[in-house]
Amino acid sequence: MSQSKNKKVRIALFDFADCEGCQLQVTYLNDQLVGLLEHCEIVNFREAISERSDDYDIALVEGSITRKHDEERVKKIRENAKILIAYGSCACIGGVNGLRKKFTQEEAKDIVYKGREFPIDVGEPRPVHEVVKVDYFIYGCPTNNEETIKALKSILIGKGYTPPRYPVCVECKLKENVCLFEKGQVCLGPVTRGGCGAWCTSYGNTCYGCRGLLDKPAQEGQMDILKKNGYTLEELKQKFETYNLCRMMGEQNATEKS
Amino acid sequence: MRYVSLQKDKLPQFVNSLQKKYKVVAPVKKENLFVFATIEDPEEVELDYMPTILPPKKYFLPQHEKLGSFVKDNVAMADTNIDVEPTVLFGAHTCDIEGIECLDIVFHDTPADPYFGRRKKSIIIIGYECMKPCDEYSTCVTMDTLNPRAGYDIMITDIGDKYILYINSPEGMGIIGKNPIFGKVENERDVKTKLLKLREDKVKNFKVQIDADYKELNKIFGTSYNSKTWQDVGKRCVSCGNCTAVCPTCYCFDINDEVKLDMSGGKRERVWDSCQLDEFAMVTGGENFRKERSSRQRHRYYRKFDYSVKKYSKFFCVGCGRCTRTCMADISLIETVNELAKEHKNAK
Image 1 (cartoon, each protein chain N blue to C red):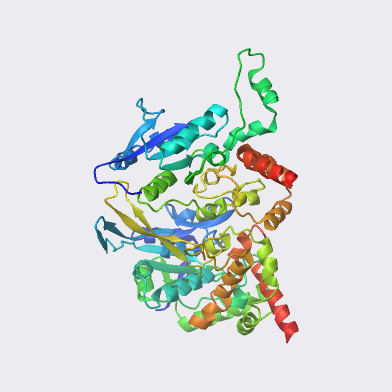
Image 2 (cartoon, rainbow over the protein chains, first blue to last red):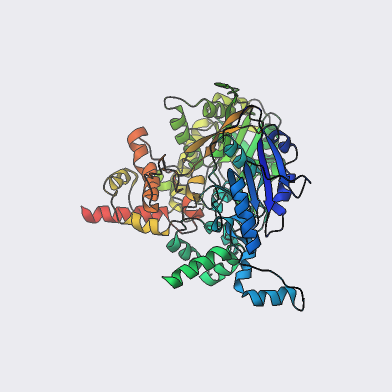
């Protein structure tokens, strides 16, 4: 984006329904923040500073949007910001908050707040782009600082940022990991958007699909792989629900309607 | 002196002597598989190994390679020299050495790539000859990469009771030098005959899996561009890019400019890319020249069996079997090529 010589780009961070872990990642940027602050100033960052401002250029929105009140708040942020970035899984794909969709509002209230008398406002968890226009997405649970920095730099110089469209397997193989399917585990790597540097699978974990389903998964091929390894689509879906229920329910509803 | 011998129990000593002057990279175990890695202890070296997950191309064409840097308001590239630590690639199979030969041809084609050239010059290759087949996926017999030919400095052959080392370059000679751990070979002609006999015999243990010989392969690909086989392969492919990452001769890369956070400058970096990924053949405006997985897979095969033959008179498949071994969707090079061979035969 363009900027005059003296004016710094004003960045604001906001959180909605989430654990604030992705904001915490920003604090871990340590000395990299110093470089960033040559050209930017952070004007809203509840996790780290007390100041507040409604005057900002870039808004990093963390968390999924649930209640009516949140909807209004994020719309206001959209109005104020020149660029809005959905930051982290909850903001980009709904994330773990999507699990709420397995229940009705009443059931969910009953499970979590049983016996509480005060009124509790709950809503439908949604990724940010279902409520307002999102310019850029930084995926991950939590976000990967290497990618965050790369994305911010690209956005600051006006190039924009497109996250990888390939699966986690690409980066996993470059790390020379032994494929988890070969070890008899269900890994979501083949159907999950890469860009994390195969974070989990390089440390002995399976992929949990936190960066969301690929835009264009090869359905037939993926089914073959599952079958070959003795897994059903149901088993895969169950694992995929952890982060992706918002999209899965959305697609299900769309199919039912059509 | 072209041959020396080495007692088997002296191999760690040999590796140790190399470590004094070089970084030594060799096959080591990783869970149930193998990878090339820098050796700390000579005992880590596993000479009886299956092809590693990634081929040794990673030392000649790193996954991330800095090509130079630039500063704000000056577009000229600076800092383009690379320092490569003198390295010995130890225990490379003949198929992998052939893979490095393929890269060497490509990167020395005009305009020659100085980065690859520098790395190639800094890496001494000590091969280890396969005496038995690795598994059912390799096609080294058909691709004619089973025996040592060229592209190495020293070749180690296990002749039963000891190793014979063939010295193939002045660099190789420099390594053997006057090191007392090596035994003198009395009659070089006898050794040569013995090795030839050994190779004649060992090939019998290798199963020929491709239903076409070396010379026919190119003709088969000449008539296979519109084969329905590509649709079948495309249906199964999930575009994970594993086949290209593990291929010893896949060298496609992307180049990225990374600016520093304070925007005062940045660096230019080369990274591995893959023709199997959706965005590989996408250009500005969104047009994608190989949108379908079938066309991307076909492209990969043609890069190995057709285009390279036309351009460099050389197959770019070295028969290591890695692409088949790594494919989650079980896309088999042997099955694909045999399917094409069958169609080609029937069409005649």
